Image (cartoon, rainbow, N blue to C red):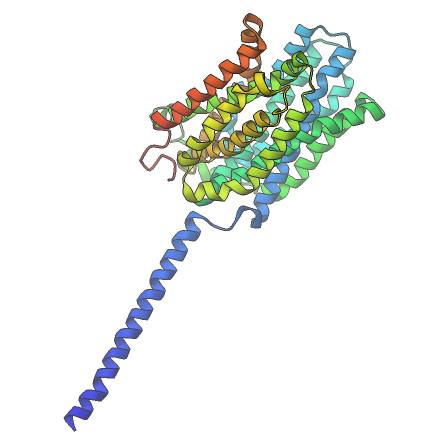
Length: 430
């Protein structure tokens, strides 16, 4: 009898133990799932607000990309080359120099309000271009207003992306943003050329204005208004000096500047060296942009999974070699090799730098962080035109591209030897 009771009790004890273990397993799985979702969240393209943000940034960059053709209009007005350079440079200077101010304004007022002001300024400037008939103060004022509007839109857009995207999805998300920007820069100028041939210069202004207007409409779904008073407690702690005391963040900015300078040198001078070699530059842009879009579509998730620095160390030599080979291969049978390597390098490095920058600072500091980062990145595009122009004038176009390739290799060394992703709560996520 006692043996029978013991036999009945033992299975009950075993069942209880199994049930407790099952509950423990379920709870562990639930905790792991919650942790994964907190770090990764849904895929960016499944988030409607992110899709709208991506489309908004595409339209913002399409707006300025249409006006890459503004030198044609200035030339038709009879402006000299130095005047054309001044007019185009005023936009870039306004956009870069105002970026830290935009970061502060976003911290105080939120992304939605600053983006709205920026897109209104961009739309107003795009409309006012049709009123400009000659070089003068009004033309420069329009360019400055347009640069400030673009600066506000970019600061707000990248700040929102940095704040809203989960750490485990950042590179994937910035890869999708990269696709939008490449598409805007690749397709808006050819469309603008077609419009000019068909309907004249006013059609270019109309296209730029339409892009700005549509960006404002789509942004209503991407940006949610934030009550500034809700941030008042956090705002007091947001200081640029404190961010710049983080050595790892400063090293990241240095590395970013090297990358963007080399990236900008190529599109600014590829047409000149192609003409010197007796070939068309269009095929370089087509190959590099197509390969960049293709790689951006698939690389982001893998970078998030396998590590940002790992992919940067792989991509930098490819990027550097793509620039170094331009003088020797641009006119030969192997002409697709340089744009192929260059496009792959851009596709890996652009989203990775953005994702690393987005990992710095608290949520309240993200606008300031991304303002500094995007200002540094855009500064490279200014020097990529001006400094590279001086180098080409002093030496030759062949030497310019070789020196730029060496400079890109210096960027590789910054990734290898400088702590651009250091430990600590304020530093990027691994």
